[in-house]
Image (cartoon, rainbow, N blue to C red; front, side):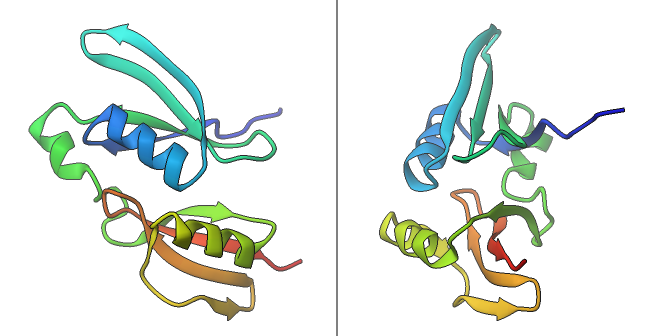
Length: 130
């Protein structure tokens, strides 16, 4: 058996603002943007590098979905952006205006700093050791 997680759905307020943030600030590629009719789109963004898990951006429509924007991790870090060069990417992301919530630190597992996306979701920028 050969399986992998292909996409993680991320609730967003607006497709276009989310695409702009993830492609311009985080430097992700826009993998897909297809009109599905009825105001829905299939929008996928992915970080540069080898194929892996990508984000499926889902525009919140219902009141419940709208309340969930930025809260999918319930205030915890729940998305992890791995890098092969922490300090390079930290400097680039800071220059692009990304909001880091802490100063970088070294842990037993790697170099890490928490940042938030435009909706307040918390992420780790992480260069794993070994």
